[in-house]
Image 1 (cartoon, rainbow, N blue to C red):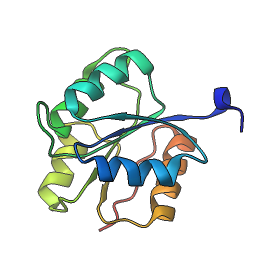
Image 2: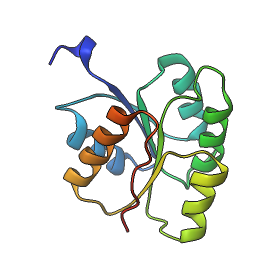
Image 3: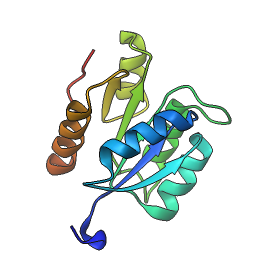
Image 4: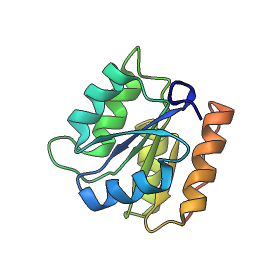
Length: 135
């Protein structure tokens, strides 16, 4: 597929190994950008306008929930789907991420590569559809 036609996914995680793993899953179908923390994610969302953001919750400088809230509050970034991709599977965190901070989905680690690809594809195709939670 032509690079200019590909959707852009921003992977946000402070663990290089996690970013590398997700990049390996996505690189064939998507253009991939990476950020190490929530501050970088907010800046990159504004400057690069990715089609979707996959974000860890626990990170230095600005955590994923605060970054999601900032992205959803921004005039030029509020329409970008944000999926929390995290090892934290508590129902309270899921409800906070989706209902308070505006996340469009919540996927717990570890995950199957095909589950991640399917979830991204569904969200990008449906625009405002929510990704079903996978525990």
